[in-house]
Structures are given as C-alpha cells and as structure tokens.
Image (cartoon, rainbow, N blue to C red):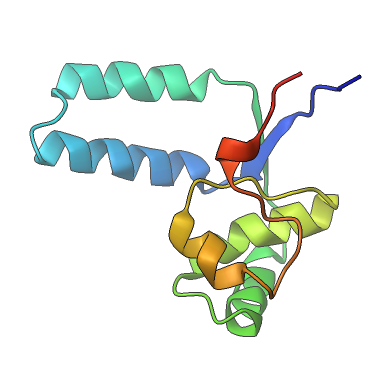
Length: 114
C-alpha cells in the first residue's frame, strides 16, 4: 500500500521556476507567451509553500554546515528537515554534494507513484 504525500517546497520555488523559464526565453527555447502559460501551469500545481520566520538564518546555517554552493539549496534541506521528510531532487550536483553527509535525499528518478 502506498500513500500520496503532499508536495511541499520553500516559498522561493516560484521565483526559481520563473527564472528558469526566463532563461529558456532568453535562449530562444520558449516564446514569451509559452513562458507565461508554462508558469501559470506551474502555479496551479498542488504545492504547499513553506516559509518560516527564521528560514533565512537556518538556510545559511545549513549551507555552511554542508558546504553548499548556494544558500538556495539549503532552503530545500531546511524544509525537508522541518517536516522530517525526504528531499526528492533532480539536482545531480546537490545529490553528489550531500552524499554521505545527509540521509533522506533521494534522486527524483527513484520515485514510484502510488
């Protein structure tokens, strides 16, 4: 038996998605109209965005603790730790970086939907 787990992410995720989409427009991979549509489709996904009052300080602490390249990555680690949940990611660099340092960070390709 499997259960459906809610999608949860730090509140900075929409900003990161918008930036990724914008970069694809700049590279000529998407039109502006397609970018707007794609972002709109993202925003209606059932994701609960988490922001706590001390998330910035916690992200900085975690980035320093795990020697992460970017504090942004640490926000995802912080949310996973706050909820005692896995941090599913497609970021191969982050996976390699946290390997052996932190448990509960599986590759999204291993996810099996129930």
